[in-house]
Image: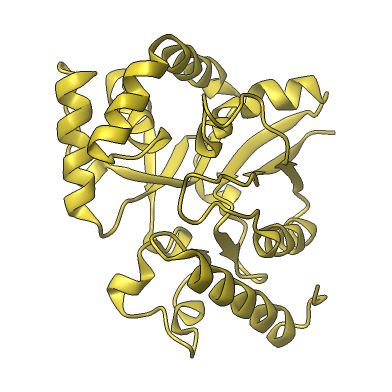
Length: 253
C-alpha cells in the first residue's frame, strides 16, 4: 500500500556552513510526525556523487530514483532540509496540496534572492523571468508522481552544466538547487501552490522570533534553522526538539 513520503538528505558537508554534521534532531522530529500521520520517513545518508562534484542539496533531486530503486510506492513526497524541525502536533501538510507542487515563499534574505535571480538569469536562463513574490524556498517542497520527469530534467541539466553552475555559485554565492528549481518551475510552467509561512519558517532570526523562549514554536509548524552559524544551529535545534517532545508527551531521544 502506498504512503506519503517525507524525504531528508542528511549528509555532512565540509565546505558549507551548517552542514559539517548531520542533524539527528531533524530526523527525530520528522520520525515522530510521520508516525502520527501514517507517513514513511526516508533518509539519505550516503552520497550519490562525491562532495567535490555535488553538494548535499542537489541530492534531493534524486528522490524519485531512490524510491524506485528501493521499491517504495508512494503518493506524495515532502522533501525537507536537514535543518528543519516539525511540531509533533502539526496538521497533515499533505492534505493542503490539491495534488500540486507546493512550496513556501522565501521570506527574508531578499538581497541574496535578488542577486540569485539576477545572476542565474544573466548566465543560464536569459529568457526566463521570476516574479519575486513567486520565488520559493526549497527547504520544504511537496511533489508527486506527476513531477518525476520534471525532476529528471533538472538532474540532467545539472549533470550537463555542472561546471558552469558551480562556477556561478562560487563566484556570486547564489545558492544551489533553490534558484535552479525556481527557474525551471517558471520555464516549464509547473502548476505551483504557495503555502503559508507557518509551513517553512525561514530566516527566523531576522523576524526576531528566534529566541531562548522558542517563540517560533507558538506561531507555526515547520521551523527552518537556515542562515545560522553551526554552533548556534546545533544548540537551538537540540533545545527545540527536546522542548517539543517534553511538552507534547512524545518520546525524547
